[in-house]
Image (cartoon, rainbow, N blue to C red; front, side, top):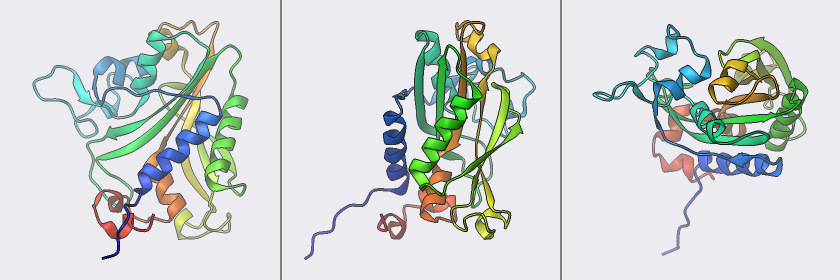
Length: 242
């Protein structure tokens, strides 16, 4: 009987690629807990008390544990890191996150996210753009091109939405990009002064940028997977392709 070798899951494959890319750019990997308190998951990130992400529709709150929840992003890792380190630093916080929402081909109640944070003296939007350009070209090749649009996120100011030219059609338009040639890929911006202050860092001396992207979404784009649920189905027909 022929020996069958195991296969690397596409999420693990893309995770390893991302860690390699950012490690070569000088980023340190930071990991932490998946059950978070309200302060680190929301308050320290300048998310208002009335923000909809605090509602039960978006957050899994832990029963009988006051103000504890399954983290909705990996940003709390960055807050905890800043509480215990002084700039300059460059960190990457990948991991599993949880959202209380209905599942469909592009949404899951659990998925994997990767966030980056750079804080130091004189850090600017130009540094952010260079880092994202480098990251996406390393992952998708030289054809990867980005554009920045204004966007709102409570923890950054200014905030930007990052679009990448569709790597399937090279910007000509196809079903993957809704025929407009571009795909919304991640959110980013300059770290809000309130976030720095909440973490014990002087915003008058230091500035920083942050970004967040779905690892699952990157895997779907890179490998042509059309439904996020395939990544969690356990169907070996998917995994055996890698």
